Image 1 (cartoon, rainbow, N blue to C red):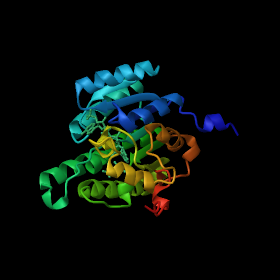
Image 2 (image 1 turned 45 degrees about the vertical axis):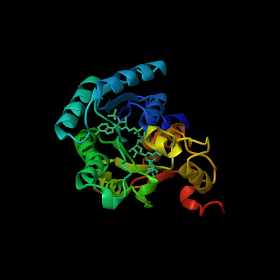
Image 3 (image 1 turned 90 degrees about the vertical axis):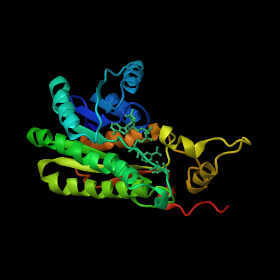
Length: 266
Ligand code: NAP
Ligand code: GCO
């Protein structure tokens, strides 16, 4: 058995949404390292140009698209552009996402809707746009970036937890509905990862001490550290490759053991 071939993405086209930086950028870099052609999107020209430069510095000739994943017309157009320029999308990573940390009783309905729109409705929209091509090709891989909040709640993240919990079930439903077409849909549930999204939770305090939430996460993680985007690279290649052809509807938590651990005694 050629194990290198099993994990190879040579000849495959991958779309990673929201991959201008952060987790998406690391996952796109990993998929490129395994041989995939990379397409990514974000909302602004400035982020796009910076990202293209960053990919080039890594030796990756990625194709970048300005596309708001909540806009179905933009998504359909982006999928058609990718198909024309890189070929049918074989691998989709629904990574684009936001969080708003607001106590629920202070959160507006519009703010709640914004989070759900990007974190849950958009993975539906983008998956719907790429599945027909995957069916036609006879295979496909969809990876939804879920969260610890697909399993747990905490103060101020009601919209995010609701969306990521829904994304876990959307993952299982796509797996159920399209497994017969040799399309595998799985999730990656990152733990607490050091990216711009979590920067506010790691801000050094005025007295030079660590943020209380930073200390809390260190105590809750057996590895006693925050995750890095690179910790997600191997799991992403696994779920994007032939090596996971019989893995379907699974959420792979890459959390350093937080979900398994009661936490260090203070
Ligand atoms: P991030 O640094 O804030 O990056 C989010 C990315 O999504 C950016 O590239 C952003 O690009 C893009 N994006 C946001 N809304 C978009 C929209 N409507 N259309 C297109 N692109 C959009 O976040 P991250 O930490 O890398 O997180 C990436 C994913 O992992 C998210 O789904 C997040 O929920 C999830 N996650 C993160 C952690 C963590 O600890 N960091 C843990 C678990 C799960 P522009 O703003 O330039 O458009
Ligand atoms: C938060 C964090 C988390 C992480 C991630 C954990 O405010 O609790 O932002 O939600 O982003 O989702 O898996």
